[in-house]
Amino acid sequence: PEGFLSSMAEGALATLHRFDSGNLAIMVWALAQLQTFHPVVDAALEVVRQKDICSALTSRALSMLFLAFFRFGRPEVVETIFNAALAAKSVVGASGFSAAVMTSEHGRDHEREMRLQLAMAEEAGDERMQAAIGNSVAIRLWKRGRTQAAVDFLLGMRAATPLR
Image (cartoon, rainbow, N blue to C red):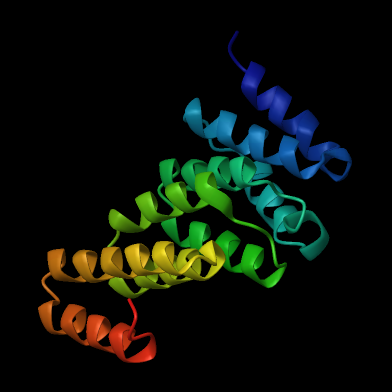
């Protein structure tokens, strides 16, 4: 019925302090899927940026938030949440990184995309995965027409860890 989503979002706004981190992510994701922006989305963003809430976000919840804000046409918020997650020492994980990298590939900021992939390599903790992700960084730079940056990146990676 008409007005249902708005009414539901108003009710959520009044009780947002009772939502856990996962439910906040689900709510924002659901509103994005329904293409319904409401002020509760920005209120939820302020809540998930809090260190104690952000550190409780799972990889799946981060993924939902990244995709939701991407769908809302706000890719800069993806980076805001991503940075808050790193500061809170959250594990971004496979789902979170997949969504974050996908959103960055559609943007113009190659530096942002590179930062996300380097953070992913650091979280991976496995030298082979770090090398694979590093190669991916170089490939993305090359695809964005930044051939010299790609070469410089690979040379720097080789100098830092010659075994790769």
